[in-house]
Amino acid sequence: MAYDTIDIANYIICKAKGLGITDLSPMKLQKLVYFAHGWNLAINDTPLVNESVQAWQFGPVFTSLYQNFKHYGNTYITTCLGACPVIDGETSEILDLVIEKYGRYTAFQLSNLTHEKGTPWQKVWDGGLGRVIPDGKIQEYFIATAVNG
Image 1 (tube, one colour):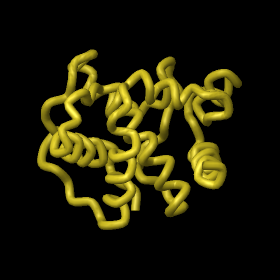
Image 2 (tube, helix red, strand yellow; image 1 turned 60 degrees about the horizontal axis):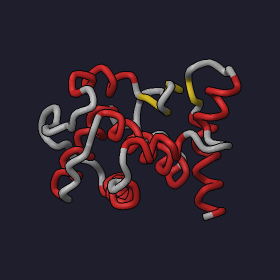
Image 3 (cartoon, rainbow, N blue to C red; image 1 turned 180 degrees about the horizontal axis):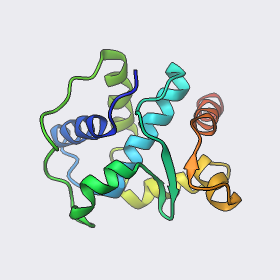
Image 4 (tube, rainbow, N blue to C red; image 1 turned 60 degrees about the vertical axis):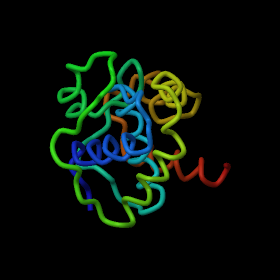
């Protein structure tokens, strides 16, 4: 089941706040949702969100997240856009693992991870393939990441 991107973002915001992660900027949120989407594609063979990922200068971006959180600029997100959503158990496990694994990274560290050679963002951005990063490329990358450690 693909979720609304804002619901996934709200879950991450609520969970991060509960874990004491206080540096959740719009850019960091973008990257956490992207990593969760990638791991969900790799593990469950299905998209996490019902929105395409785009290649922007600082990495993968979900347009709806950009539009809803851009007013924060470089400051930190302090509240959810509504109530913390109910997410199914398997999906919440993936989200919790992503927050645990990547939540202590800064926004720029996460952005740098998405810019590494061979990442879906790098292939689309440097390859002049347009702006949309296909889910197939994302899934392929995260499966390879899981296999190669």
